[in-house]
Image (tube, rainbow, N blue to C red; front, side, top):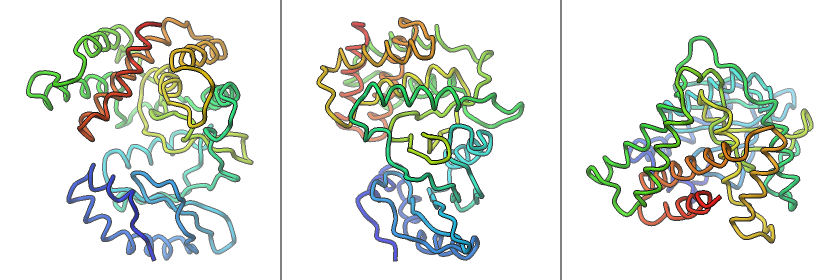
Length: 302
């Protein structure tokens, strides 16, 4: 039996009636996966957000994971990204059904989150190691989103949301982010497949290769964007640093580890923060955009 928890609200929030219909069919979908791949389905993982993710075992005892999402371009992109990465720095895709929106994945053991480590310097060091293994050249012919198009589309959607303006969002920060993206993004140079949502809760401990990523969005663009996503993710555990010192320390450490200019990386972090604030406004409304824009204001001062 599948218990529909609070995570289902996220599905309905993002996908509307399509999402509600998908939830009703989810038990049938998981049962079909069990039959197709000869699986014994186990209780789902606790921290569900926008997908149903549950461990399972194959008929020969191998531990795997079933991930099911509302069929969409995003799910298709994740499947194709996993195929392209082919287990390099990331969990392996064993099989998939794009029409159903399901993936059969390698289960990473022990599977603890990188974000659970108390020492953020260690978190940053491990993330840099995964990042060095993860990025790969994009296939010659692909349907992945280009980072430049993704960013420009997201910023333009804000004006649509607020009928030509920016509503309560800080205009000066959005204008500066657009200026930085113009400086940083060049579609002619976008040839690298990147994760697109690279943060410590998407990195798990693995017996196969120390730490491995999960849940790629599948974006083609500058790997510095992935670094910015990591830097801007708030820590899950107290660090003893105020937000400005925390961001500055992460930028310095990962910039040194990956030989990235500090000022360049700070610009990427600022631009990403504004972008994530725009997403929060468009997806959820209310004041959920404020933390990202507050972080952008701090990064502006750096």
